[in-house]
Image 1 (spheres, rainbow, N blue to C red):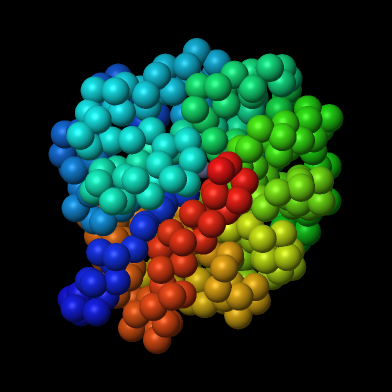
Image 2: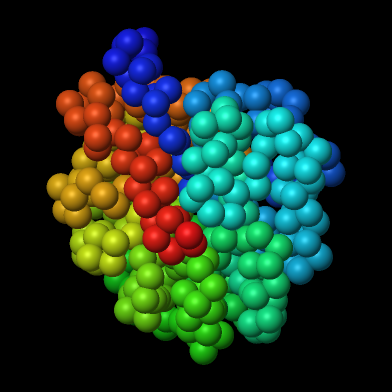
Length: 333
Ligand SMILES: [Zn+2]
């Protein structure tokens, strides 16, 4: 796909925000340096290629189940900004993301993907805020001392019957409710990616702020449990939140995943909830198959596909990052 002049201009003008990647934790699990400033084709994302692809900001997963690991990854995010201030900003508010865009730097937002590491201790969540974390995923599918009442890490169920069973799994624990309230109080985004349906409904009802679903798909376009249903998407719209569309092929289309099919899901959300509630949540370095599009430097392909679909400039800018930025400004500051 070639990129039209119009799409290129729009892409350059956009503040582009990606709601989730696993790049730091993948580096850590391979025993490699957390310095992401070198080009490395073994990963979907590094900072030079993110900047090349026009990506302004990405939410970096910095922990889920293990406390020590979370401390190492949060330190890694800080060190990137401390050691490479010419390239990286650790953003803790919307203005810092805008500053990254203006200075052609890359903004990292620190994101937890599950709270099991906190072991039921809310002070841990407050400390995460003090360390710069601004997005709190309630679960990565864990049970135990987590925020949801039951193991829900069934990573590939598909049938309507299974979906129905998932909906009726118990929702938030007392600790989960405490985390949502504390996020509201402090100004952290509550992220419901990986949550069961019941936990989703519990959290949306409880939260006084818009929530995010940082990386997922549309269930009616592709029946995978990580997709939100039409009912959930309508509710997300009423809540004022945003879903980041994952570039995960099996969330997009089981048979023929493509950028076109990704845009079908985006349009589906716009039809249901309007243009203010959908963004990008690539899940780079979180999956073992090539994402669609495959790498950070390929992001202009998404803009081109959105333009080709006939979406107006304002809507394209919202999808690329404007919607996430609005929610960050509203909730985090
Ligand atoms: Zn995930």
